[in-house]
Image (cartoon, rainbow, N blue to C red; front, side):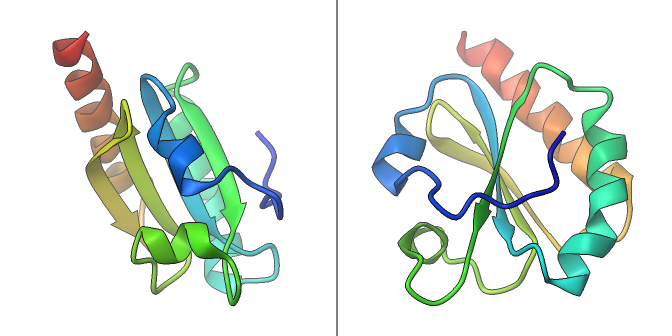
Length: 112
């Protein structure tokens, strides 16, 4: 799992068109909150290896984060077929991420 945020990530339309369970994480490589959250995120994702996880660099002039209303980093948006089912901002422990992942995969299974 790469901890780097993609500077040329997908557009909102491309994200909305992604099938299945997808987590979009907004932040930056230099953000202290983002760096602190990485071990928690890695821990939570260990139990969900088949979930797509995108890290998109956010900030001024980056429309994807604005289109999701991101105000703090890291913000993780949990999507199923382009529909938001959960959101986690600045996680303090892996459990909150795991709960959102479980909710998302449950939603994906019931939709599929």
